[in-house]
Image (tube, rainbow, N blue to C red):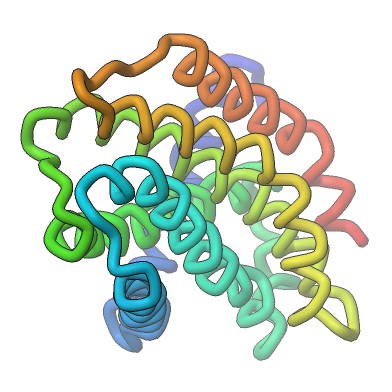
Length: 231
């Protein structure tokens, strides 16, 4: 395959994987429904446990929100490669005439779409229970959500591929993922807290950090995923 055709082949392969993931989710609705319900339970329980005032919501709400997203993301990412092993689908994907990274990229895009949808459902509920005004900061908040969600699903999808081949895969993924995503959680929490402050402000350092994290991990996954797939 020529270098000129490689990007086109990569996009086509990733699109095919994304469509496969989308069709599977539309049939079962397992991932999005489970993630939405889990996230709602976490946010509501935190709300009743702390009974936050408006000031406390601005202080503690961002951290609780991203903890809910992080736990929901780890729950959603778990089956990414596990279900491919049920009918030896992963072996068939290895034999397909596509770049191995296209498999990962398609799953990253699918996981981003599913987790992003769950977050959009959760945000209005969070705003009601924590008495936070989202509309004035919504465009900037969506930017933080997009970068933070990418920061969760890129390393999370790679770790899912690693954990899928282990015996104790249910325990291995959180053990790999949670320490790895601590910087993302801190950056997203600080960025969101700035947006909830009075007056709202989005520090560029956190946006740049999240964008850099996404680019670095996406680039690293491009070089290592073919070896993970062979294992």
